[in-house]
Length: 309
Ligand SMILES: Nc1ncnc2c1ncn2[C@@H]1O[C@H](COP(=O)(O)OP(=O)(O)OP(=O)(O)O)[C@@H](O)[C@H]1O
Ligand SMILES: [Mg+2]
Image 1 (tube, rainbow, N blue to C red):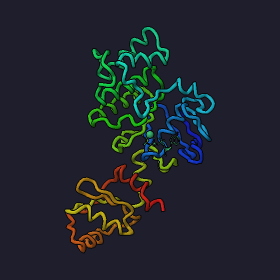
Image 2: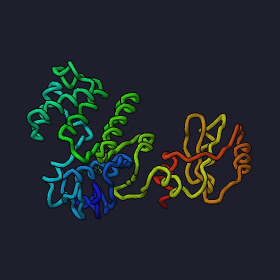
Image 3: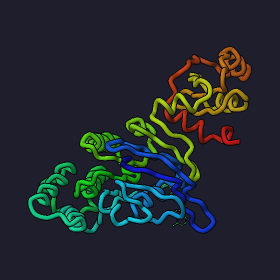
Image 4: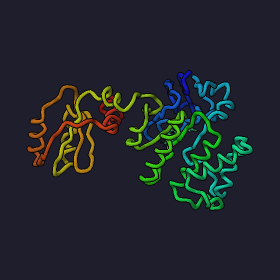
């Protein structure tokens, strides 16, 4: 049995199709990255998978339960951290923990153990009576994750858990996610940070509600780019980008620091041509090198207008 099995899942709001007939599977213990731009349909999908929002069409099986027919059983077997962290800012740390412990019906020795565990992972031992709203973002985020998994669910859904959190806290948070995955928990996570997607075992990309790419990071880099990706060092990346964008062999281009990356048409390998065209425009080229594409290169390529026409 798959940990999560999604079959033709669709959500319409009136005439608007927010999630458009998507299907995929997630295995137990996997860290599964769900990516897409703002408004792509990530939160809507997560809410359906958590049994909170009824699908318009299709179904999904989460821990074996149908989100359409058994949403209450789904809710009991998962943990969910919503996009705006599900904590109450006007409650203290311990009140928040006890609220979630109560919701999940925890009792006795196990309850005490789990409360301590949540305090532990969120570095809040001794700060039980602090008002949650006054906690730093990174700490609040760990507390939100802790409360979401206080009942030890086998599957957790995290909707942009690291947005607005500093890089060190993000890194620590991913260590926590890894730990859970190593313990066999399925982690379904959305993020805008593509370097975080590299930590996922599998990734899918959705755009305007439709699934447009899936695979692990290596597969995505191998399967979805037609040609090579080159990095060009120049003294004027902004103008160089403008000029190269007009060339038909440049599928997509973007600025990375002082360099530009161009994703090329299949079989294009003429560095001389690029040198020449930039020289004609008085732009000095310091180097042109073939590079391993990043996930960002792949996604920019997949989401670019040139690709979609
Ligand atoms: N209750 C609703 N009624 C009408 N439209 C909705 C509703 N909920 C979401 N939508 C629309 O569905 C689309 C997908 O929204 P969703 O929140 O799932 O996107 P998202 O991928 O989570 O975006 P973000 O990265 O900004 O969180 C958006 O166009 C949104 O406006
Ligand atoms: Mg969202």
